[in-house]
Image 1 (cartoon, rainbow, N blue to C red):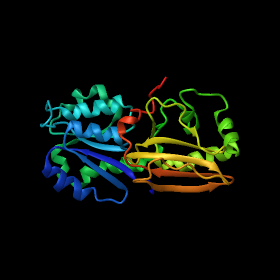
Image 2: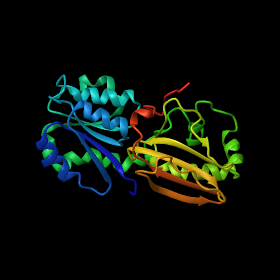
Image 3: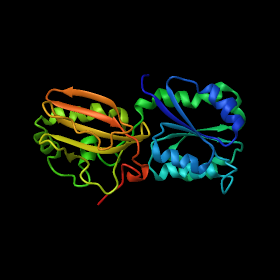
Image 4: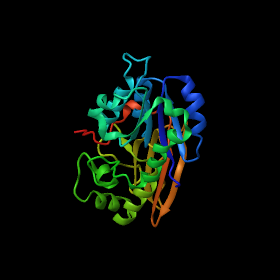
Length: 273
């Protein structure tokens, strides 16, 4: 499997993080982040999308011993499609988590973490089935084009931008899907509409987004093949992470620094009317 799996481990005990999780999660398929508290986990979830998460229920440094429950509740509120592996030292935790069952993939007893086979078994099933999971990174919108058209949901959105860029709707859709597919879910800027803006040239466009897949802001730039691609206003901390030409349409994606996460909507479901 070529796709990198974003994995979050929510565990407050240093022994379990360093001696159990880290040695067993050294896998080229995985990009692993660790959170030691409820608040730390929530901030990571705001900034990045996780395909799977090990969540220890008992986070003793938080305001209650059940900080992990709050993390699971937060994932549900954010409508994340994260497959959650609940870790608990008790048998009754299933009852406590009835409200949040929709995102829970499996339960592990704390003692079973010392057995690598038991620790990794649910994660292996998630990795095996990840391509078959029914999830839509654009929330209530059917595809990236419909999502980018929001909140106006203008008829003939693709046709309008294709004409402005001097290309075909098929070429525009191909460019959008290829340039953004490895960076979804993406979040729009708060209070901004539409999501794409005209560049300084007649046949160019750009937009700023937060990529939860890579956990940083990005700029999408499009232009007719003979025009200059729009560039970020702030040149510091800029890196081109994707650049390609599709027929008569050029596209580039820049990774950015200096744009705060707070400047972007919390979820792809947000209405910004």
